[in-house]
Figure 1: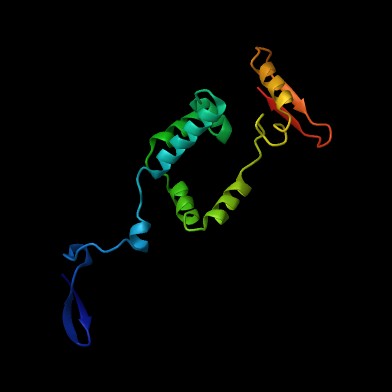
Figure 2 (figure 1 turned 135 degrees about the horizontal axis):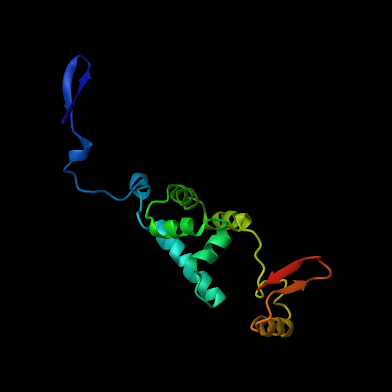
Length: 155
């Protein structure tokens, strides 16, 4: 119990930390509590999805090059349970309607063209030829569009 001075009378107030009241339905306070492994499991799920899309194991070096960070930083991020900046970002965007959240995330993502990108995959025959070329040990392949003046480098 803690005390307080109220209208000239010293009155004790119940300590909320020592309450014997049964738990109530989760409210905003419970919703905002820290979830220790949420960020790490999300990062690992993203790594797994990248591996599925690319059909290969993604190394820490690959993840580092995608993020423009040192390999040790990426390794550390995948091992740590506390990521305050990412936790804050997730805490903000999870309160948005799904369509707004998806729009904001999509607008923040840079275009990363692949052979499955809509600008290329409309011609299945050409994409198949490109995939055949890429599976050869010839190094880097450059794909250039004539009308949009865009170049895609694929390795």
